[in-house]
Image 1 (cartoon, rainbow, N blue to C red):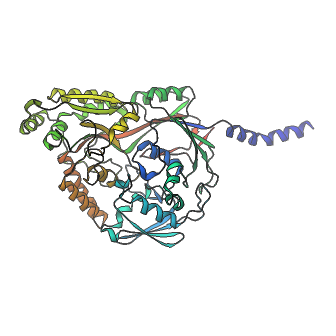
Image 2 (tube, rainbow, N blue to C red; image 1 turned 90 degrees about the vertical axis):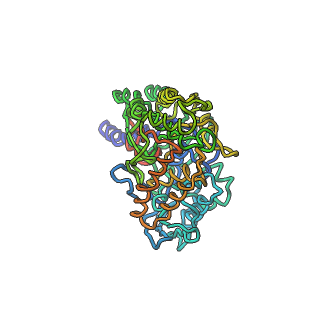
Image 3 (cartoon, one colour; image 1 turned 180 degrees about the horizontal axis):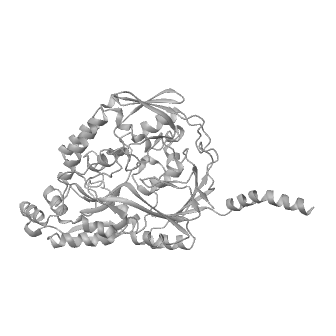
Amino acid sequence: MKATALGVAALSLPSLASRAAAASGPLIFAAAGTVTSSWDPTSHTVAPQITAEGFLFGHLTKCPMSEANPGEILPDLATEWSVIDEHTLEYKLRQGVTFHDGKPFTAADVKATYEYASNPDRPASAWYPGRVDVEVIDDHTVRLNTRQYGYPALNFWYVSSFLPILSAADVANPETLKQRPNGTGPFKYVETVGDQIKFAAFDDFHEGKPTIEEIVWAYVPDANTRVLGLLNGQYHLTERLEPEQYLSLQKEASLKTDRSLSSENKYLHFRCNKPPFDDPRIRLAVCHAIDRSQVLAVVGEAGQASNCHISPVKFGFTDVKGYPEYDPEKTQALLAEAGFPNGEGLPEIEYITSVGFYPKTREYGELITAMLQEQGFPVKLTTLEPAAWEEQLYRRADGQGPGHIIDVGWITGSPEPDLVLRPNYHSQFALINGISDPQIDASLDKERGATSTEERLKILQEETLPLIAEKAPSISLFSSVFLRAMSARLDGVTFYPNGPIDLSKATLS
């Protein structure tokens, strides 16, 4: 009897251990940003919400966006894709996929998603190259067609990894879409309570139900609070560490750290449609007054030098010749040419930045303010916590945004450069800076209209990116590097360069 009992106990140990692991509680993610009031992915351009949507939604393809191979495309809800002609792309869809509400995923959902998201009335339409028609060939084959809208379908080649696939039934009822996300991703939405969002593992996820049963998204805007919670075991995973926090946490045996180049650049955007930055000479004068090497010294591990308005993991990245460098003599010459010698006569310039979301923004904001003041710019620095800063970020109904200079990153989940360039620098959108420049518009339209990747690459590198640097609606300070930390008990995590975190294969022992 004793031997039999011991044998039964031994056989029972694995199942007991599994139950103990499952009962250990949710994975708590201390997030640096919060989400909007709408779960419709086409209603916003907010980076934290894109990270949240990464748990919930699938895409036609995936792009890992490594610096060594930024153009790599992998299957997701599509298993094959091909160019039919200049205006047509075909996608073969994965079978046996279901939405969180139990409805099967079919070609009708792709058609509804793409035609809805590319509608210029949608707030996030600036992310997409233009309107597109989707032809349903059968339940698991679609063709994207741009012929009616006059640009090549190749523009969607990389965007397919960024646009979350929605249910056709939800698209038909925007209120439902707004109030409750319904994707095909590894986790499904449960509820929002205060600053916390709960997600549960999706039993029918097409790659297999995740081991982690529940995720709690906890909005923690203060970086020090996120780190302390990680150290005391309150949180299991956190993002957007300050550089010194990252270096310190590397020494903690109970934790693991991750450092990776992102698809985000950090910019100072000028409000180009109001004085004094409606004059490109004043914008360039500011650019030449900033010593970006000193800014990088402050940012440390969280930045990488770059002379380009897009990240090195983007298609078309190049080290732009003639990119504005630190040159106080040019600053003074431009100020004098514009009628403001030594900055005399300039209005007070408000420089707005956030604190607690991006690393070192206060510190390098104070440094840049001092640099500009030294050259005669009457600059006032305003620092805001992330939610208040987001309210100041975009242009308003009158076409103008608060302040004169605003610090922001721009991050997207695809190698497609137009996800950055058109929303920020085409006058049809110019969401932050309000630039309206016919030359920039023409160059952006020209590269969008290229009929081959080779032609498009040449236009981007030799015309479009140098022109944006010359006109300076913003200056890109550096490419962001993500600094994260997690419990040493957390394994199998995949980080994407635009912020989302894949926990579908992760375990928390």
